[in-house]
Length: 398
Image (cartoon, rainbow, N blue to C red; front, side):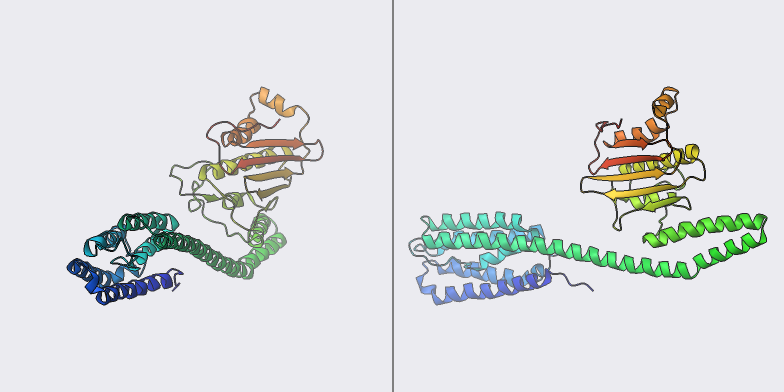
């Protein structure tokens, strides 16, 4: 069970409210002869004591400290401040404490713990206004106390927000650590079982010849692909779980996007004996449409490699993640593209590069750049911005 970093703060607030309620009652009992209308003070402090004790469970955690409770709690604090003049008409002439005294700060601190520094600033501003109205002509000490509560509540609210963010970061780190350990365990199991079986099938198939040799060759290809996945530290996922279509083009799907996708899970399917995938160790997260379109463009580039460079050509996919963009480079060792060939193909109506690659990237506000030297292979660089454009605003590579 994970303990929240806020829990000690809520417990401290509960104790503070009880102690300051007792303090306010003791001040009244000590100075009761000074009040012209002591019954007003007695009624309010009785209400304050009952409210503090009855609502004690409300200030033990954020879930039970609702907005309605906070509003009622602050109303009681403001009412007590403004009733002070009715109970003691000399309260404006002398710098005596208000009826709720420092209990009011507990109400403001509840706002800070529940909603952060913005809620604390709003609540403390209302308390400050009520104190200034009650005093009529506020003294330096009154202004000093008002500023102290205002600054302290905002500071505590900010600390709470930082603590919550740190707790979320820690929880995420623990999840990643657990997932990494599970991947390592799966990698060990795969290495000790599946990879060894595939290697044995390859050897036995090659020795037997005939159809068994073809089966051995396929087992060898699967062994290489699986070993590549294990060594990369990425466990392949089902396309439907990744937010993509079941068995079709990764750029489409009938179902609604499930949320940001890890681009690596969409590119894993392209890795194989002749395609090497190199990716960052951390997830490369993109919006569903951008991730699918980029993966589809990579698939189109690999189709061009197989179609024009031959089935024996090798290809390499490199994924690079930058703060403002994601770059995927597809390179092959084929014969390359002759100068002017892409323009000629587009003129002939063969729009593989123009539509399947550049068109997809243009709609995302990205770009596709093709660099090819005859005899030295082809390199396609696909760039997608982190915040996809809404229209065809991306630049087209020459």
